[in-house]
Length: 106
Length: 448
Image (cartoon, rainbow over all chains, first blue to last red; front, side, top):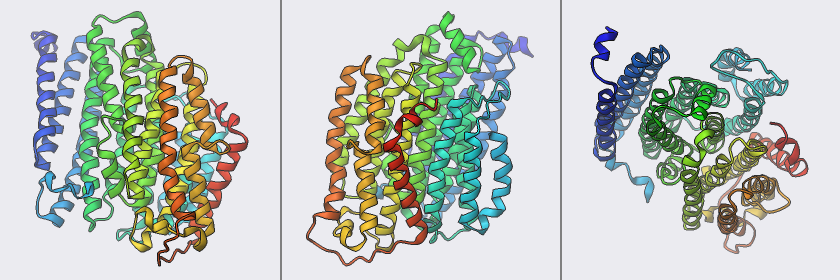
């Protein structure tokens, strides 16, 4: 299994994760639907997970993979809270569009 | 200390349902154990050194005052009260993690334990659209910042091969195989943490979130959460990245200068007290960023500690005065304070003291916070201190607006202001602490 991972050079993992991460960042900054923004955040976290697993294999060090578990658990908790907040907002506004939420600025 | 906190928190959960008095007492117990000097090393994950202990002690002091304030501040919340106390205490646990981590994994976990309850707390007024909006904004920005932070941690891990902060520090000193990756990682860590402490240009969420959240939660965010953010920032950079400080110090100096200038000049134009306090808290973040610049030098940690304590206490006092004026009357503008000195001299006095302390007027605690901080930075970055001093002078203007409204405005309003006894106690305790800090700032400064 480890050999299979190592058939791809580490630079490729780095590049791939960075691209995934940037797609996530771009999505967070441009999309207006809160659910899609949430998905983009998850994409960022998954890019991190992938890179951590790759580093962990190449460094021969288990810490990175343990970190992946922590990130997964925390991301799940965070998503649960986030979706809860979204449901609350949807009940009040019947919309998940974040551009509606600029009342505080005035 | 942490185990003690866990044990007491278990005790606390049912007890908080009964009310405030027990919460105050138990927090006081944790506070006294925090001072008792628990120096034990746990594993490679935590270290409760003096740094962690003293920051825990000052945060517990703030949360103690906040708990006193919240008994009244939370009275209108429609969901059960116990949850709120529990969430604040969970968040506090995260803060303790952030004070004592020796491993990036624990930094991440600490930040998340701190943040996730806060997302819920920010939105705890379910029917209030402003609170909903604050919660969503805070959540999205928080999650985004976490993603950036994690990518930074991953790159640092990839270049140094470890998550342990001391080992990273050693690897950075030796020099790593891929310095580009390390630098990118540090850069992303700076961005992620700047989001968390709301430093310019990553501050845009803060005024909205501070304004929309329930008052008590805002006070918590502005004090305990900010303390945790800076303590973690300082701890990370002073243990791990001193070897490449010429790389990141330029960025941090720019962020510090920008943060204080922009926020102070925006604060001048605010008409709402809470928004003004949000910008004021951003500007204090700017001053504190300067201490990160001199990380690792003697006195810099003590300067952050003292500054954080004076700032937190003054902010909590200001918010407790604001709550009694603004909440019953539904008016959060400066005009709500008109003629307060005649109606409620105590509230007006507390507000005036905390405003002057935040502005850093000499005999008060805030002055010593600023003095120690600026003098630590002075040797290396004199130009930054000049900017900071000019900014402090600017900040006096908007802090004085409140005082002028309270003492010197002729126009009266018909608002009735009553002080609940819990808020009165918070105010008295806050004023006592401010006075104590005025007399013995050196004791706090020397704690670390």
